[in-house]
Length: 282
Image 1 (cartoon, one colour):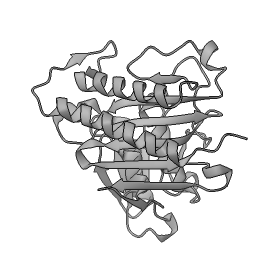
Image 2 (tube, one colour):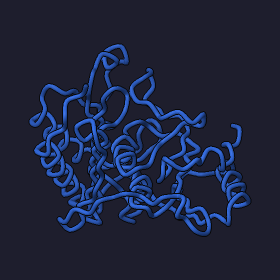
Image 3 (cartoon, rainbow, N blue to C red):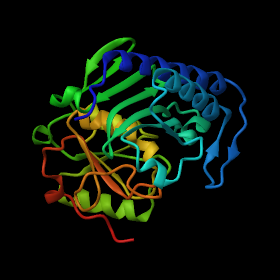
Image 4 (cartoon, rainbow, N blue to C red):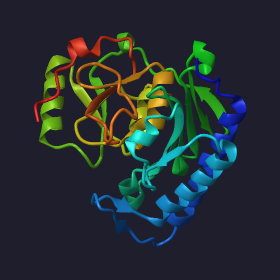
């Protein structure tokens, strides 16, 4: 039995995410410099500023819970495999969106328990939104909502059985390639078309949680911190994230923090695996 997550925690986490978002926007509104990390991904002072704000806030809120952040070296698997719960942080997901100034970048804090995200807070600084997903809600319920202008609005996705017309797909603005195009072409043949919307960062999973799309096929690499918080929001809203074999996407089960390819859906009760094609072979 996991510990219940208090509303005080959630309120404090929202404050931390909003403070990190403010630190990001301070840099966003300047002529910032862009560095390149070892994996060729971009890095800005906004990533580092948000990291500092979040780590300081989490250490003050829960000094007993360890933290993994994209902007710090993770402990060896032998150490973190012993953790019963930990914070998983991506201070600024969608740095390419940040650099391109399209506003589709997010601040992400997830609480991982038992190899799954059980709480997720996703901030969208430019839109002044915060998505919140509590998967267990005292082991009985699931709840997801978005604070838009300070007012909470519940998220319930959209039942796939009520869907009319083409399958609505969210996909990355910066990742895709021939395999994704081949996959979507087959989706279009199996359904009444395929309506595709490019969206950046973990915001794609939040779009699913809001009922703005049906599926998000990810054919390519991501890291656990990229989607942990948004996965909690999506699952709490009735969706799911699955590996190609249909099993749920696990966390902290191996040396690498890279995810396998996955399919995210807005309605986890719908038999998507029976109707969608398999991912094209690598």
